[in-house]
Amino acid sequence: MIDSRRLASVTEAVGDTPLVRLRVVTKDAPDIPVYAKLECSNPGGSVKDRAALRMMQEALKDGRLTRKKTLIDSTSGNTGVAYSLFGAALGIPVKLVMPSNVSKARKDIARAFGTEILFSDPLEGSDGAIGIAKRMAAEDPELLYYPDQYSNPDNPLAHYYGTGTEILRDLGDQITHFVAGLGTSGTMMGTARRLKEHHRPIQCVAVEPDSPMHGLEGLKHMASSLVPAIYDRSMHDELCAVTTEDGWDMADRLAREEGMHVGHSSGANLFCAVNIAEKLQREGKPGCVVAIVCDRGDRYFSPVKWDKRYVW
Amino acid sequence: MDTIVRIPAPLRSLTGGADEVVASGATVGEIVADLEVKHPGLRDRLLDAKGVRRFINIYVGEEDVRFTGGLETALKAGDQITIVPAIAGG
Image (cartoon, rainbow over all chains, first blue to last red; front, side, top):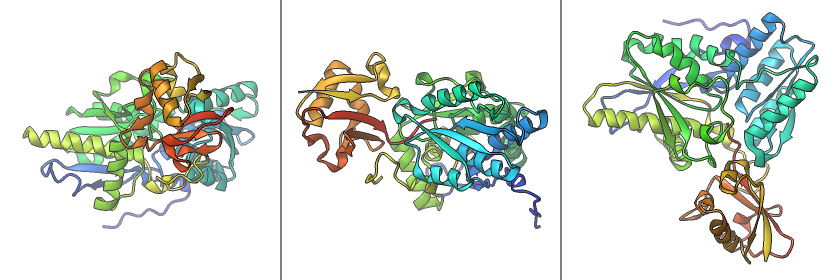
């Protein structure tokens, strides 16, 4: 059977991402299927396409965003790529604030769509970038639209209607565990809300870096960060702290052993997912785990501005 | 010799909120040792058994110490040290 994917616009290419079963890194849990949901298959290459598109479309519908305004937001990268892509497709100029130590690849991608980038102090991290975007938007509300991915309900709703619904369609009653990292927390909030409506219980496990100073780009250490307004701790059942090294090593293994070259935060998600599967296997319990692959590893090839000769 | 060390936001919980602290030592390694005395816990955030953690960059001026002798990098008067995460968070 061939499904037609002849689409009228790049915006229609968002979502309906594949679930791929892992075979090798799960060898110690042969009876527990672990699936990676490849959000890197979105047209902008990351899970952030879903939230960015919905935030823009909903704001266009009710007039918060018009083609006479410029969209401005803070982003460590993937959301910026998504805004840039859909901004180009929908005819809306985009301006982004990001810490200057965001990977060069992502700055270049955003610029390729015509986006203007303003750099914030890398020592202040993403919270510093949020402050600048907020201030600029407040000073010029007539010309700037600030979607504020950390507070915008359309961020989690994109996952409620998209990610969560797709997982239930593809796995139905099989799925027992869902794993996603916390950045804005939109993926976990929206997907978990949908999964919790299912008639069978599904454990939702949130991944976060084990320390405020970490190398899992896109993830937030909630205890030491500005907590996003959309984040509700009660939406997930467990919090799994992953070290940078474990996330990076799993990303390497996924490339070499599964043919999936994913980013570091996805490595952390899959590290956690494989641990859950191994534990279920040891305990003789049934299960099926789904984890989010947020983006591809090639986003992280280029050294960042500050480390001109740095090799990972 | 006293050197100013600039501290990134995620580590300021260990420096009482300060974005700059002063530490003394003739090399980057000695500075890190002094930082640990003044701000316990900082060393483990910066170093592992192999040296500077992979996702942390320590600069003396504009130079990443990975390329100037690592923790043995000698300091001269007026040098400023900056600790920068290799990536941006959330």
